[in-house]
Amino acid sequence: MAATSSRGVKICITKAGANGTPITGALSKSDPATLTGTGYTAKADDIIYVKGGNSSLSNKIQIVGGGASATSLTLVGSDTSADADTTGGVYSHFSPNDMACLCWSEMSISVDTPSTVSVATYCDPTATLPSAVSSAGQISFSGFVDSSSAEYLEMVKASEDNVERYMRITLPNNNGYLVAPITFSSLTYSFPLDGAVSYSGSGVLGSKFKHLHV
Image (cartoon, rainbow, N blue to C red; front, side, top):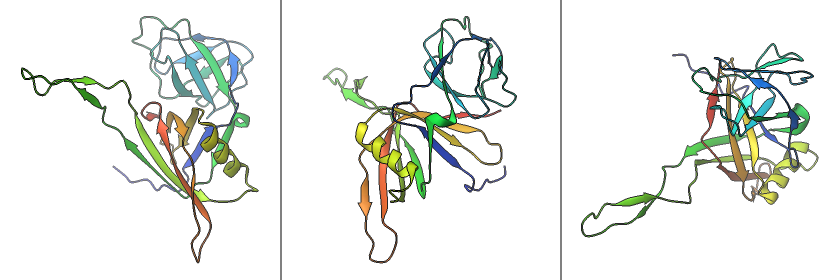
């Protein structure tokens, strides 16, 4: 197994108010899955969010693969070949205009262990139930303050509105994508005596990161 440098990683989130453009299509039962319809404008790397429906892609973020056309989109890393049905989904296309790409200086991802609530009794002192409040994990990040930068201003919005966004991390050397829904919390700021003014923050994942790759 060869190591891959983090140089070339590209981190993008959906902008405030971006809901995507609804598109219609039929989802195939195949590996990878494809959407077929008419009038598609999606290009490689664009996000397609699948809402509802009967397929295993329901309520998940998908990425458009290479070779997209006006009538067909391949979804990277998807496999619906074992699905009993692929009908009923609603598809939203997020173009580059719907995305803000972030110039962070550092990012890390942590995964939460599902929490439990004790329902212990003398008969069963170890009994638990799954907690109704759960998190798939968090990310922590840092960057530099630049009020002339659209990406910094988008981070300020994201930290204030607490609206869930879709995150796409493009990995270098054709290693695919990491995708997840995320809600950001407030930013904190650092003022070193000798150095750049910086910010840091965190975000809560709506689901674990999914690695989509060919």
